[in-house]
Image 1 (cartoon, rainbow, N blue to C red):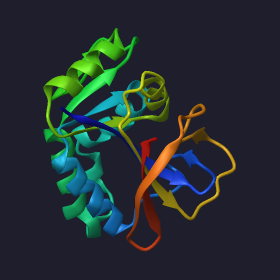
Image 2 (tube, one colour):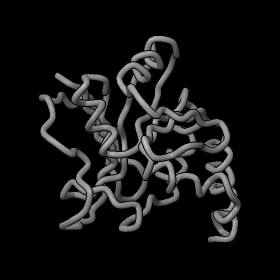
Image 3 (cartoon, rainbow, N blue to C red):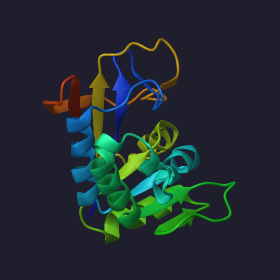
Amino acid sequence: MAKIIFGMNVSLDGYVDHDAFAPDPTLFRHFIEQARGLTGSVYGRRLYEIMRYWDGDEWNQHDPSRASDLEDFAAAWRDQRKWVVSRTLTSVGPNATLVASDLETAVRKLKAELPGEIEVGGPGLAGSLTELGLIDEYQLYVHPVVLGRGTPFFAAARPPLRLMDSERIGESAIRLRYVPD
């Protein structure tokens, strides 16, 4: 049975914004290894469209000093199975399956039929899955940044959570792992 995990970078005040801060090289390497080990990812439309960047080659035109890590992440992301939840998309890219209706049934089926860990991408989608009782673990990668605005990591009230562990990764991020209590 698969474990459903929602994890994202988050500011000290609880917001997610991929443009406001980026992982340092150590945390980025952690994300590469994590992506390699996942059974797959379930994405909401908006985050999937952002992540489609890794399907192309534009990433290869940035920061030559990190080319090896960028190439490793692109390969891991491309190899990973993806399920994209959207009512507006009509098609998705390679190694991806469109989930256009009945989110609960689709995720319960993934959870029942697949082994390992499936990551949830996007706070809106995670909120819906939380309401359905389908998130098994929350991983907050907390960065020393205060945004004061944006999309909250938790879109609505959550059930009580229990801290499983904390781990410093890289120079400034701390991963907090919580499970529903």
